[in-house]
Image (cartoon, rainbow, N blue to C red; front, side, top):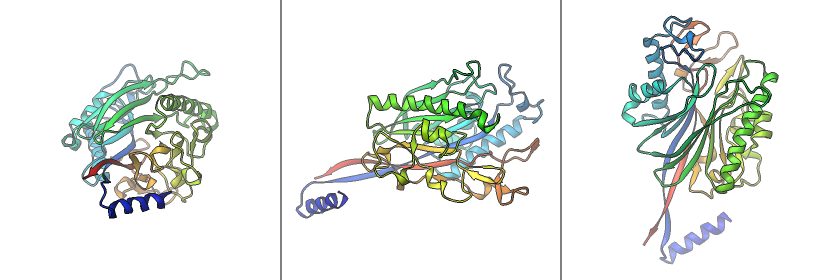
Length: 351
């Protein structure tokens, strides 16, 4: 089929007919679990006491603004001076930290706005979406609550849904996720992540029922790996490297690109690097049929050396965090950012 299209284009050019040219631009899209971005002010409604000046981490304004500036440094470095047009973030406390990140850090000159809703999470940490006003317009947004039928009183983080319009005119549906962690034990928390996956899948199915050719991007810290049952069987996010056909309405997990690579990932647990942070898209964004395409169908992990430090216990390197246990070391986060470049193309007639 591709050879036929190429032959037709060449024929049209040689015959002097009006040929459609494609002009393209690239939108840089990232996700980053920034780990415990709390405002130093105590919130009496959440369990944030440790991250206050009087708390166990002695979390004052000096440390707070250093972390704000560190996050800005990461995003700017990731884009080699021009940070992403869209950034999903996890583990942010409230609007105040987002305002400081967008308006009181080096990010201020890039014109960021944000979408955020307070969720019922016990610690008060949520997900949010940052976007550059010059590149992205938010058309719709809402929080998607997650209530476990088997633990109805658990205070869970919401999913965040946003419909955005890009500068090329195309729309993109974004779902930002931060699923239940494995802190309570891996096996014991499997049903919780499976339920999160069911909620996200229901939202995807609803979007596709109304828009079969929708461009959908799920991003987040899923606290499971691409091959876990929540991802493969509940969310039904397939391996694009093993799929014969990349159907428009099928989800594909781009992070399978790293599964077969030894000791590569965005997060290190003991001696294992893996991809808890993932980027998942509908087939339309990787099969060449849509105007929004993932560049080379390949995601990236931003693993620059300044984000890492020697791992004296397990060898190699590990994430350079803000705290090492209770000790403040002034680093970044316990996750590395992941990102893709979306090629946004428009057609115009060459008369």
